[in-house]
Structures are given as structure tokens and as C-alpha cells.
Length: 131
Image (cartoon, rainbow, N blue to C red; front, side, top):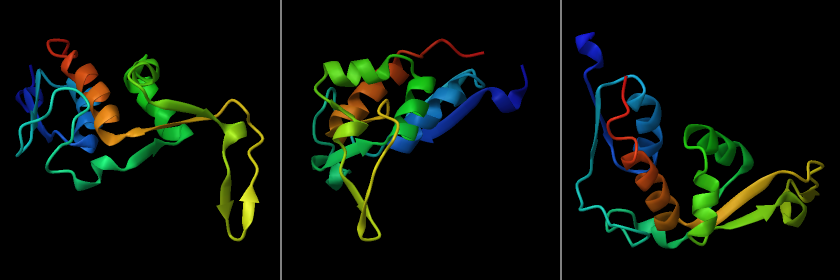
């Protein structure tokens, strides 16, 4: 094996979790590092003060996450995330309301701990599935 593809190290935050998926397809081992003890389940993470706020995954982000981790949307929904159809959205930009013609678009609303715990569990399940 190419020694440059032996081990990747990435942070265990939101960006690191998402990047760990394609890295796991290219490296023998991917290590997630975090300065704090990571919670198990959707619990407050001391190093992430905004995790108590509602977080939204917009259609493009939700679709890409689903491509990376098939079934993750259903797992988030089962864990309590809200899937909101585009016909229910009310978005205002530049002084006017944005009307979305594609009724099939969804966003997900949940706390960051809920989203991260579902994604983290799915990433952990990738262990041993490298090249």
C-alpha cells in the first residue's frame, strides 16, 4: 500500500465527521481527535457553545450527507429531528418572500448534538471498512 494512504487524522467536530467518510474510503485508518470527551448520544458538548441552538440542514447539505451516509436522514428523524417540506418554509430575502417551486425539497431541524450524534455513530460504524 502507498505509505501516504496509511493514516489520516482529522478533528471530531462536524466538519471532521463529514470528511472522515471519504477519507475512510482512501486510508487504512482514520483517527478523529477531540480535546474534550465526546458525549454518547445527543448530549451537550462542552467545546461547542452553539450546540444548544436549533440547526438546519438545507436541501443541498442534507442530500450530500445522505449520499455519504445512506439512511442518515431517517436515523435523524427517528432520533427526533424534524423533516420540513419546502411547502412549509417561509424564507425572506431582499425584502421579499422566496417561493420554492420544488415541493420535494426538505430541510432538517434539530439540535446540533442530535445531528452530530447520529452522524458520529454512522462514522464509527465505518471502522474496518477502509481500502
